[in-house]
Image 1 (cartoon, rainbow, N blue to C red):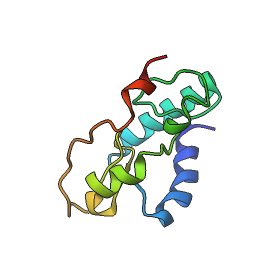
Image 2 (cartoon, helix red, strand yellow):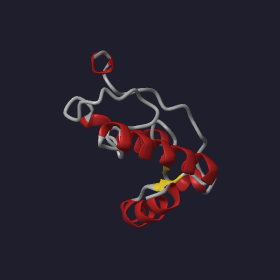
Image 3 (cartoon, one colour):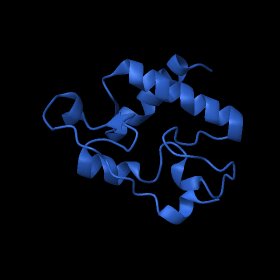
Image 4 (cartoon, rainbow, N blue to C red):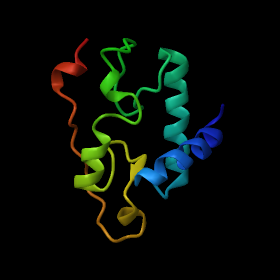
Length: 110
């Protein structure tokens, strides 16, 4: 599978849930490529904007879509890495804001 195939697959399943890909398709394809790299590296699609440990149980919260996505998109209109955004962001009805890291600091130390 390549990034474009992953894009097509995820678009069909995530848009009905209210999660849209960032309209910057170049960024989206780079992030999807990184997800595929992490899948080869770890066996699961760990968030490309966070350091995965290689331990699926430890990283369960950052397997894309991460557990923080819902709250991030609801509050900021975007997930942490900017892959998923709200329709309002893509339609310029909401300003783009920096999304703070919600993952507990203790989860980033292995």
